[in-house]
Image (tube, rainbow, N blue to C red):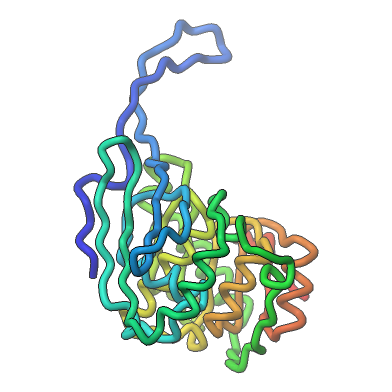
Length: 265
């Protein structure tokens, strides 16, 4: 596991708090979630620049490579090293086994990394809307388990509670017990960190379900499908393409999940 830098997730900042009832402004200190450019270099080639929180970068490196389909198993990632850049931001250097790096080399030469979503720079619409496998895992999850997971998640988001500025991704057992949580300013990054943490822990996506504190965009569905997750629960609504891709590939999608209701196809 990659060593984590000191205090990587949030920093304090002073504010003046203003009040609607006419009281004079008062000094207030709050923690702000760190958002920084993370330059991802794989086998010596610049691959992407992601805006992310520089915490759990070992999990992020593995989850990112799995989600990008650069590797098929954790063993193919030989090393990952993160270092802070004096001018600002972080460099995440990933080394893949030489035999697994050929597809990466071709993609990296064609790709321009211009955004934080992980899609910018892909050279064609065909690659954005790449063919996905069907989710083979089948899991019986009752409504009570979904409500249980959604209700439990806020207390398991320390960075979210401190900053009110980050997303969380959680892996849950079929009964709704939350096993793992990862947080990040980006919802895509939070999910990649979770998938990496699951791989490090030997947890199979097909044996539980994922909860995201985000709207459900289609790239989150893609990541869940590629991981083999049978059920994705999101706190906010789904987009049209997310709903279409989930239905087409055997992923059950639950959206607008609250402690008292949710939407499901």
